[in-house]
Image 1 (tube, rainbow, N blue to C red):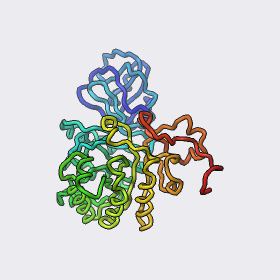
Image 2: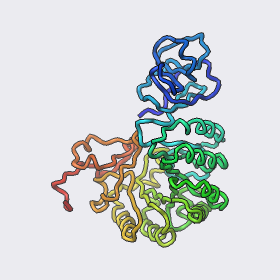
Image 3: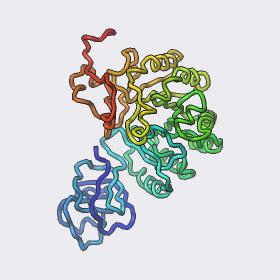
Image 4: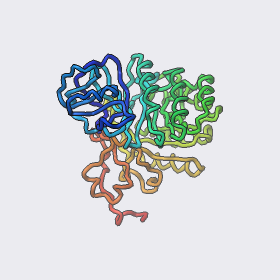
Length: 382
């Protein structure tokens, strides 16, 4: 799945954001995709995209000589950058859209799939989304917020949350955050005052003891800040999800972490146990992280069933059914975003293909030895 492309620029001195169309007569779209010669009717568009090499004397922003634009559908929202890079912000035919609020982060997790960048991109992303959010279709079911760490936008983070509530009141908002900023009660209070009942804050907690969590996220006092942040958010009535990435550092205390969550955070709405994504820092730290999923099924089973038995809402993300114990299949979800989700050739022989979430495209770098087609006739529980 392509989310970014590039071409040659003409008359672009600032980022341009809008919805794309291939039909010049369409009203309500900001950016035209065309291979034809220029027309005076095009002046109402903010910009034109073309795969052809076009030299124009018209004063209209243009990106030409783009290799391919087939990935863009009618109504997709894009940002055209001054360097000729065209990023897709929102895809109308996808249920896996997300808003990248920043690439900065105050943690540096061993398995971070998008390593943080030490630069202030606050203004760029804020200006991008303050324009893009009103263009998102009102019938959008769900949209994610991610980073970096979104809360590092400060007051601009709150402004964007407010705008999402106003512009998309029926849309589920799923915000990935390490939760540390909410250790300051005024931050949690301000989010609470927005009062968006469709906002879910997904916060990672990797151990029941501080030194393991802090080591994994590579940040001093992160555990204490995260736990305090979770309590502050709960105090102001926020919906909370706990996320646990499964790897060599988290598995040994997984059952104890499950008990810690139930006894200390029974108010959380959802707990997600997540398979490892082989992207970003994971490749550099693979020796510290990798454990074949088939080898931690006992620990995972104990943690999941413990929480479930006590009435907590539990899911398993990013896992292949053939690597899970059969009694855990009911908790498995098809969670991997469509633009990075693949299946192996072996999967096409599987009787459970339609129910399985597959794997990350980056998973081809290292994957379980137990990836194999499942035959229903050979299952023990059916």
